[in-house]
Length: 168
Image (cartoon, rainbow, N blue to C red; front, side, top):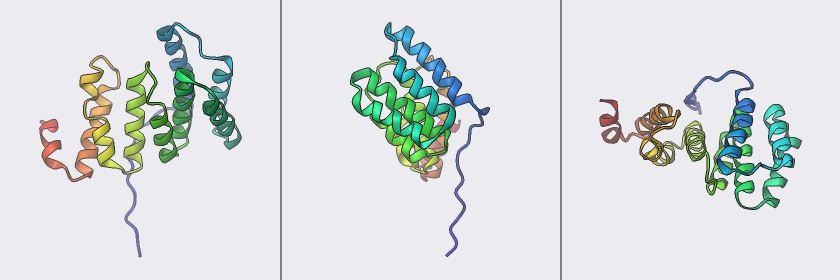
């Protein structure tokens, strides 16, 4: 049997953009949380994002399992970003769901979680996750991108009545 080709929703980014974004997000989280992420998390996260090596992922995963609170959520977020950058969208979605307690950077967390779900062709889940994005984060730089992924996901999930008003 022939399988239809999988068409992924793509937003092009320069090589290394995920590693740079992660470093930027750690800096932002430091300012927002007024607490510095541990040097160990910074080192492990940056390394996995730079190499995408399974050994670096395993080290960061062990750290995420042993960390608590915001540090654990940030470690899972880093794992999700690394998995997303390596086109491992199912693993990314799982890590983003484990980072749900992240109090800062929620717009980035939800955007990349929704994007990973859409890449895995779980369009109903992606559309649902991103349904209130603009209301929750009216000043987010990711608002238009999140809305586009939501609309595409609604269309691909055959929920045209919900997508139609968003296209007007």
